[in-house]
Image 1 (cartoon, rainbow, N blue to C red):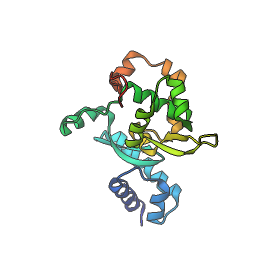
Image 2 (cartoon, rainbow, N blue to C red; image 1 turned 90 degrees about the horizontal axis):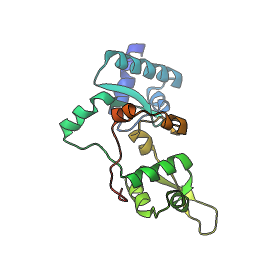
Image 3 (spheres, one colour; image 1 turned 60 degrees about the vertical axis):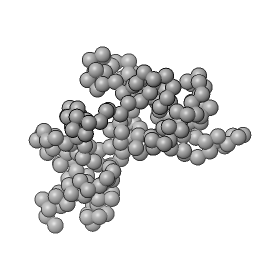
Length: 191
């Protein structure tokens, strides 16, 4: 298979994949080296970026996926007549604690938040943003929680290293925050 044909095959496999697809999986399916696939994926991503199409090829959740360009999200919402995904303040606090402190128990989450977080954790589990990693080896054997692959997909992260640091949070300007919109509803405790 020549390079142009291989690139088209990679593009079609990423297109039909319902979730981010790993380069290893593509290489296995196409019976080529992983490095060849990674080079083609990066080349495709750059081509889409330069062409300013309605979508981009992004590396997220340790895989690659076609996604709508962020600046076109409002048009997609209007087309589907849907509201943007919003978190309650409680859900966002709980999700942040889990993301930054994982693995973490519910008691540790509640200690940091200062309120019962059982319902919020359950909602995040139901939405598949959080997953149970196991049980802590202490009396009572409480469950420990961590973020899921869906969490990475929702926030467009390749891995947890992509989370902003405390310093980056403090450097956010009101203009930057307004550009991304607020993902927080003002509901008190519901997720």
